[in-house]
Length: 274
Image: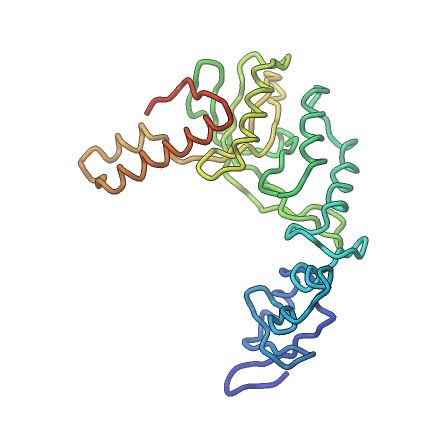
């Protein structure tokens, strides 16, 4: 370790291009300046690679390695920021015999989504009901009841080859949308899941994290992103003219954007209200 003035300086080892970005960040987190072992140029600490060497590199495979590292299991170069897709999908497949929803159609739906994985944000899981605590009733609609709950370990963050297990985001507040009389799964339920998953790729649309089942009523439930207030409650709480014209326009624009996404998917909302 060297000092440049009062700053701690460290040589960035070119062998560390085999690490992913998080691993590089952890290894070099205590150093303010990183110098490339190969060319002595300063290493970009935003993505932990030497831009000078990267721009000179002509091998596309090596450029991927410099950006994203290599898989610890199969040792292939990562071509995606989430890691090695083939190994991640392999681990999902290995877990298929560890869970079941009790319904072959739902199992197949979740498995198909996991086998086409390319982004943790778009992942769907079967989540055992005992993974939720502090379940509180919020409201009911025509065909479902909605509850808030704490998901004890939260969503999958990444695969950890050292622990040979999934890392998760930790306790997360979510919404449970429990569908009435869904012991025997309906076509409407499956269609809603498919629509939510497809729409979840877009910002401003409530994300669907997975599916669970109430062990007492045997009703199935969607595990959804928790939204603190609906529009009606927000307007009621701010009925003293505290909402500026700019905020009002922003709300309208976001509603229109969400509807635009839905319409682009050749769907109709059919229940639009404040």
